[in-house]
Image (cartoon, rainbow, N blue to C red; front, side):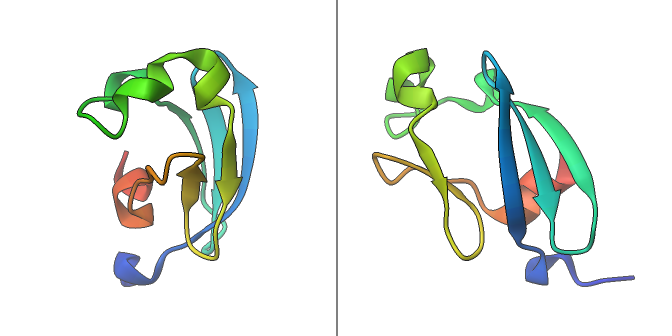
Length: 78
């Protein structure tokens, strides 16, 4: 079994609303609805869709304009 702590998000595609397709370094692909995950002060601004779509891909995960991100192993476990 692969150590998921080494998993990275290698590609991300915005689909619609709060849903994105994430490709992981082991070839796994997941479609994730982020709306239920947007809790807490860092994520609250992302409930505005104009803010949510301002994201980028770092060398290991998805990150938003305000510095909010999720650990890739958390996203992988969804």
